[in-house]
Structures are given as structure tokens and as C-alpha cells.
Image (tube, rainbow, N blue to C red):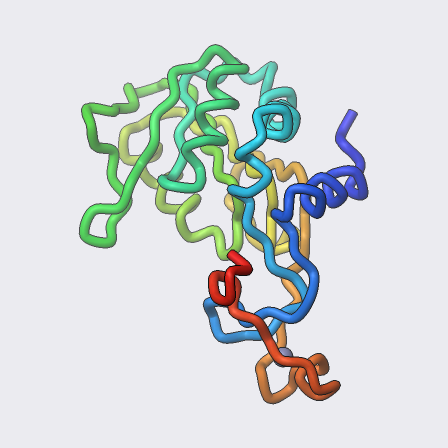
Length: 193
Ligand SMILES: [Zn+2]
């Protein structure tokens, strides 16, 4: 059974992975929420709980390799790989391009599950899927903890998100919180992060 959305949101709030207020995101947009997945994944019981959802979803797919994009995906990939008993590797950017380094490889026909912590635009996940295709691996699907596109990003394979969550964002000029006189906080400044 899938974890209820409210229970997951409560864990995110408790661990301060999800902050509510008035934030300026790195994109410059203003949002009533700020989400930092690493904050919840630092706790082994939550890492286990959330990754367990992905592992269970793909548990009958004979996954041989779990592949994730660095850096955020690594901890999720490692836990999912451990639970599935699958070899676990990661891809990382070199000169802006996602690559398998450190002697990591995908053998032709190997059954590969791609996992990520957070999908926003799906860019990193798509690049990692391409690595599987180039290596002639067999793509089982993709799994993530949080899909911030609320299901809009599609990968043309089986996909699973533990939680779908829409990003609410406003241009500063149109921000209702600014209009009500509050000031946006940049996460990372003023000791908030
Ligand atoms: Zn604002």
C-alpha cells in the first residue's frame, strides 16, 4: 500500500525538508514553500521508509542495476539498490555532460532502474536514461521520492513517484505575499539554511 500523501508531508515538515513561509527560490521566483529533500533523507528511518516505496514498486522487475544522477540521487539509489539487492552506480557531470565514471558501466541487456531524489524539470533523469540507452541496457523504469512537476514530466518508460507535489511560484511583481507586505527569505541566508 502506498504511503498516504498527508503522512509524507508531515514527515517532510517534521524534518524541515519542507518549509512554509515566503521564499525566494534560486530561479528568482517567490514561493510559499521551500523543499530540500536531503533534509529528510539524513534520517535512516525515513530514507528506508521512502526508498522502500520505490523498491517495492519495482520489486518484481528483476532490477540488476540501480543508476542515479549525482549528487542528490546517490543516497536514494544506494538505499533502493540495497533493498533490491542490485548493483548500484551513479552518473555525474563532467564539463556539463552526464557520464558514467569511476569504472562504472552498464552491460548490454542489463535491467536498469533509474532513481532520483527530486524531479523538477526531469533534465537529469532524461540524461541518465540516455546513458542506459547508449549502453544498450534494458530500462526498467524510473522512480523518485518527489515529483515536483506534479506528473507533468513524462519519461516514456514506467515511472513512479513516492509523492507528487506542485511547485507554487510567483514572479516577484505578482507575488501575493509581497503585496501583503511580507519580505521573501532566501533559503541559505540569515541562518535559515
Ligand atoms: Zn514575494
